[in-house]
Image (tube, rainbow, N blue to C red):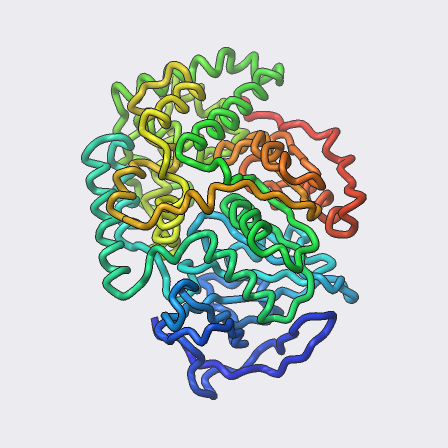
Length: 513
């Protein structure tokens, strides 16, 4: 993509950091540095227009935007530069605090700009400006590490067995096509890693002239935030990590521990609610039987995606069923009903959730960043036997063919042999030790990043406040008014966090059919 020329907006220093004028004119000056330009060695912020999103994002209406230009690989002086879109969303308060909040999104590979409305609706910018930057390789960054080849594979894969050799071959082939295309255009895939990602945010703080800020990250963004805290501690007032991925332990076997914790928490919560337990007795046993049954004899049927549209053919096997549960593809309140209906011959909830994968937005997700991080930082050093044993511990009685693949990350060993980036575990799989005030938020129903990992991360963060929110899944803050209140309290005064609202929380009643 050829970037639009931008003109530098008027700027000044207010409250200790650079302020940009909204609505900077476009197309009136020579082009700013692009992804093909050579690095000058220092980051550059170029004010400009906010990204044109497919659907309007109200939170961006008053935002001040631009691009941060940084080296692709800081180990190669004079090498190519990349461009990262930045949006600064003003505080709601008429007298905002001087230290903004900077957001680090999940994935890796997700679109950070798309998070803006969720964060604003959750009040994250109530008293402080909110800074959102696209991570390297993602949507609205240049270059993009999107993989349309992989998007098309996943659209097709809803009609395939989840864990079968033909599926593996198609996935590895799509990843190989994407890799060849990206490297053929000169992209250094090894430079798209968490350490370089963290350095981008350090450069952003410098380029904007921010003295101190508050870091907020969720999911993979917590891995990034903890790496950032370890490698670039300067100027950090507080850190909030929501749905925690501790860098020192994340690996393919680790995914099964989180899956087991989150799914079993939902099943236990049903047992604790008399109406749910009476209607769906022995739910864990029922689920195990369905996983085994579908793995031995998959269902092939036609289903309509949840958002409507044409019916598509889907295959439900044991691996697909487990991954739908891990991905929260069926809302947690409906999970007991969906399992019971499946056991009685009605798979419509799971089939519809499976069909949702048939309509990806091509190019929206940066699988290239996903694989560069996973293959360099998460996959090395753990064997197929390690992964299988972790699966057996989490779900005794599930078929080995289901447990042999990491939830949400199937066939990674084979994919990583194709992706071929350097092993970075020695520098990345490291605990972060810091006395910076830290708020740790976890949801008990989170099957992607289990709640136990919040307390685990806190072991080396002595000034951490750990909050577990009952009945909430992945990415707690947008889903929980209580978590929003705790976050606001923490940002106002990290030494006096008000967590009183958490004590009275219970999971919402489950759907009774």
